[in-house]
Amino acid sequence: MNFATKSTHMRIWAWLVWALLILALLTAPQILLQEGHPVHAVGVALQAEDTQRLYPWLPRTRWRKWAWRRYQRLRRRHQQAVRTARKVRLLLLGARSLAALFAVLTRRQISVQVGSLPILYALLERLQVRHIINKHVPSRAQVDIGTVALVLILNRLQAPLPLYRIADWVGRTVLTHLLGIDPAKFNDDRLARALDALAPHIEAIWEEVLSEAMRQGDVELTAVFYDLTAFVFHGRYQESELVDFGFAHNTPSNKRKVKLSLNVLAGSLLPGPFQVWPGRTADQATVAANLKRLSAWLHNFVSPGASPLVVTDRAMLNDKLAFLYEDAGLCFLSGLSSSRKEVKQLLYEGDEEQFLKMPLEPGPDPQYWGRPCTYTFKHQGRKMKAKGLVVLSGPMRQQWRESRQKKMEELEQELQELQARIGEPRLRTSRIVARRAQACLNRSSVGKFYRFQVREVAGHVLLHWERDEEALAQAERLDGRYLLVTNQWRLSYQKMFQRYREKDGAEKAFRISKQDLRVSPLHLHKDQRIQAMISLNMVALLAHRLLAHQLRQQGVTASLQRIILTLEETILIESHFLDGSLLRRLAPLSAEAERFWRLVFEAVAALNSDTTSSTPPVWLFPSRSSQPPAAASPPFP
Image (cartoon, rainbow, N blue to C red; front, top):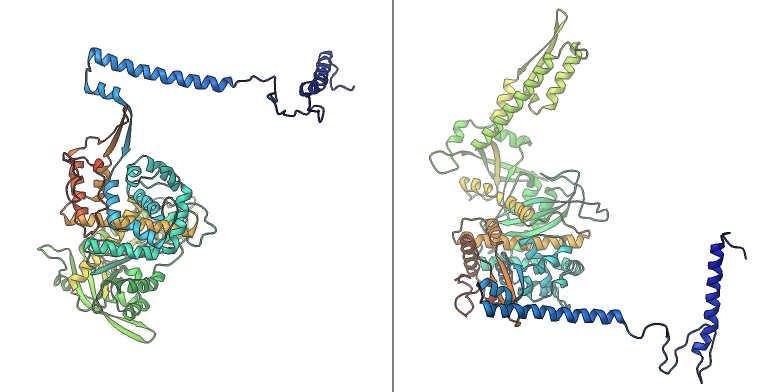
């Protein structure tokens, strides 16, 4: 034989292995050969029908399994003996404290996060969110789509998390008891499938939920604020038609984004009809589609002769859009950009004395004044006159002038530094100095208010600059002035100004969506899931603003976000005793938290709801009486 090694030691081991193999082949037939059972093949083990075992050399018992069971039995007996010893010690020596007795009799304790979930759950149930979703998206699954959507909305309101962390969050909260569903059911696969099912029905679901909120909150529809915002996305999203690069204020231009157009109802600041747009969509390109959607929605809420005022900023109106509003039978109120020649001419007209004749604020020291005017829209041979108001804002004028003065001081400092460096190797000729000075003026936004001159005297280069007082005076004349136009002629000038200032309500709704509800970033990569998740965020925003509106109606001055943060200290403690009984109790609360609980319960109870299924369980808010608390009564004794 040709061995791979010449070592005598390895040869002996090789021969020994071959000997053991031959011995096993020779003895195998003798082990298996039994009377009446012929051997089919040499070295093949066959199971006989009698009690002979297949592998007789293995032990008959599974000693590891037996030892483990024995260990578990002894461990249980030891724990029982320890508990018995504690009881005997208590009987002999007496319980030194109730805490010691409670610790002996308690098998385990579990703390569950309550927070503001019971009141938010009750609010969403009163709005019939789960019922409406299940009506549009029926399901035969163990957990219906409405319940899944309800959990996602509550998570947005309480502690926004990615989908893969929702199940863990549900297990740590009181939702397990409110819903009676195993938290493992809310895994990310189920949540993603629910978003896919919701996507085709988000518009119908939103309209019905919004109608229910307006009915229960007694919301008056007098004006609508329309605006756009952008949600930034992180990732590639190469196959997405929504996530794309585009321009949006206060968002980085090198990030992909999705835009959302939203109508906010005046007074209550409830979100109205909305639409999701690709990130590359221009603001004015959304107005026509919004007018069509808004007209169809308003048809169900307003009388034929009445029309709410649509308030937009100056980027949302031009001549073409003005006629679209007119053809749709809607009234608009908007600002106009000062870059247009006609608008700039109206802003230049009128001295400050003319503005002081019409204060737009009551009181002895107004800060805003106005000057009436008219503005004519022209498009495709059509003309339409609109009521105009040139507003002079004292705070805005002061801010613009202070900012301009600061920039002018910075520019002059830069020119002085350039003048001090004249004569250096790279600043020896008048041509180079003039080029450097012109570059300084071009970089500054106030460079247009300066003139400079470079000349050589006795071989020395001199730089001289001065302010263009005429151009500066013309710019200061426009400081704090802007133009408002409307096609609702019966609207007073003071009301025009007041309504336009209230348009910041849309910005407030966007700020709540981004900061409190954390719409962005979304960890989703399918367009239909992105649209469905944004719609659920809008439902969360609707519940948030409705509860804030109710608290404001009750005279509560504290912000809803502060109330939610204060209620986070509410914790439910479950004590499981040795006899199998269960005790649920709340951890002690601060006086402020108890006061907020009473306020939010009264606010929800004031809704025009005809359902009583939203009352939280009795054990969640125990009272001195055994009867469950009424919906309008405070949850604490």
